[in-house]
Image 1 (spheres, rainbow, N blue to C red):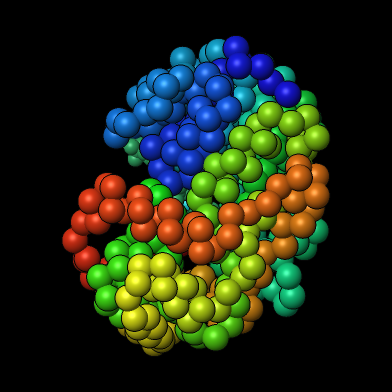
Image 2 (image 1 turned 45 degrees about the horizontal axis):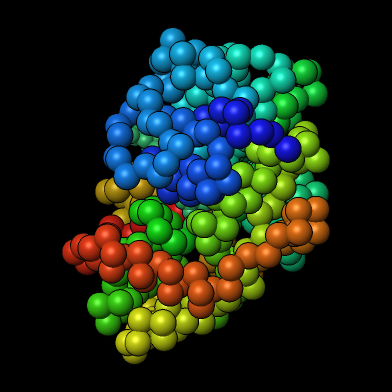
Length: 327
Ligand SMILES: NC(=O)c1ccc[n+]([C@@H]2O[C@H](COP(=O)([O-])OP(=O)(O)OC[C@H]3O[C@@H](n4cnc5c(N)ncnc54)[C@H](OP(=O)(O)O)[C@@H]3O)[C@@H](O)[C@H]2O)c1
């Protein structure tokens, strides 16, 4: 275990994943520095924000100089991953203050590509799409840095996020806003195949564990999610918690393809459409057993998310270009 005198630095600390990790660490009484280009405020006790641009190598050294644990929760724009993700990772690795520094990578399931059966950590990195390939490359680079003694690395992978602060996902806050307003929501491809969704507060708790447990190091971990529901069942569950009728609809592939002709983000999302055309079920059993971890039931998580929206102003129900947004 680390001690509370150790500094935990969360790169991308204002984003969905970053904010959840910051919150979980602060809850554990850790000393935390949140880093991003723009401050969004609202920090709990024990958290200080520091501005830095990760694309500028020189920005990073001062924010990492006294770090014991670094969490990489920043990401380039969704349509710039192949061009920018590897360079950001090199910047982070080269700015770590010592080879003993722990580096916890926020990751997704893209490296595997389309799979049959549960998605577990020992599947090959078989993605052929550009985002999946670059995420596999980033993970390989980080694990080789661990092997080479350049850093002490752990990687935490999750399915699509939902929950407080999640603004870009198939089940993001706009999806919740629309359901709460009694409106129809569209689910990509097929309403009746199971699809894992990760509650963001579970993810924050899990990454705080990866950053503080020796046993986590040198490995890829799948953060446990509650049971994979179908899109229809998830929409119905959220509607039940909001006490409104559910109005599930389908977003067909042709609509995404068409939108992709004019919209880069839609094009990028189209590349990931396979996730919704077949069962997409994350297996987090290894993490659950290793760290005695249980995910929040979806009904509790949905209630917390709706309560958070009410507390933070539910905002306008915009019509996004594609589905919720992009995962
Ligand atoms: N969304 C999902 O459903 C999901 C699911 C599983 C895994 N993931 C993974 O989780 C990671 C984070 O995703 P997210 O949805 O939490 O992202 P996000 O909400 O878009 O947050 C990104 C964060 O990175 C910061 N950032 C971006 N560029 C930066 C730069 N050049 N310098 C410093 N900070 C920078 C942003 O703040 P500023 O813009 O103010 O700098 C923000 O704090 C990604 O690797 C993603 O693939 C996401």
